[in-house]
Image: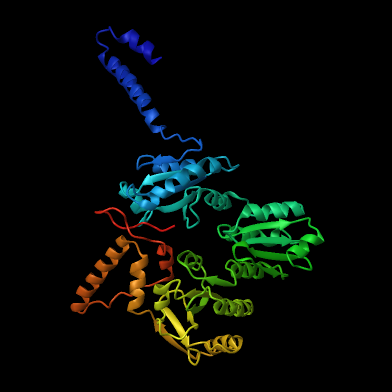
Length: 447
């Protein structure tokens, strides 16, 4: 119609306004036709390859897929270079899932706006975007284990198991990175809310049909029973009810961690969302036979005192961490403290060190005295600042140094009190390492 109108009027004098209008419409349509490809150019395909993103298409990518796993990297980062081939291996496996997960990466050292928006302060930083919402990823980085770990995010809230073989297959496919909850003879509605709340932290399933052989295998003698498994710690707990929401949630919350947790940069991350106090035992060496015997006693205490998290660390294994609790080579060990997960910990009067005789009774006395308030409250000293420096990425250190300098300047004119640096969230930075290129910040995050 427009073309016909233009043809009719193009040579007619006195109709210049109509002709101009027609020309304008044609030019407008032409411009729109040129723009449309650019508007729709951010069309992404699930093809088993790693998407390379930039500022122009990043937001479009995370909104195009229900699940997209993103590596925020820097070209000079050694850890990033080692991660890239693992992502290439994992991409086709994840894209083939019923609910595919796309792997992508973006140079966050170059695209500062994206890095700032998503609080990227180290490389590589890994996040999974679920329906556009980001969740930090702290799991393994080898391709096969990364695939197993990420499959958790697209699994059903509750998996229904119909047979003994189905139960075995479910446990095997779940892997060892998350605790596994199996409800034997438990109504699905009893787990519906808790499975949604803790989906990112655990596997949930309902076994509808199973044999006495399976009951023996999982060591429960009646139903309904909710079994919590920690495959990586070879540990399980059993809950027989009542199956009311608050009691089920309490059991699940307390079973997300094993009865006793070895402290490491990775395991510290598991403590981030747990609000319980930590009964921490410091050994000279956590691998020797005396320590292992003591750990067995701690496991028994942990089973009877679920209001605490029980953990341990060896001075030889992680000296910087141990020194934060006033432990050095001359300190009598083992030593027990109660830590709040931040900058405060408590020593128990009369239990500064655990003697070699009747250690079970000494553990009981320690917990009893703590509950009675026979404690000395302490905060981390200068040694812990060294610990922080050894763990944080250098960019964060520079910020802290700058803040300290500003605070000192303010303090000299008597206007502000010094800022206390602390928090359990330090655990998120526990794997930070040194950078590998001169002139760049040292933000590598260790595997």
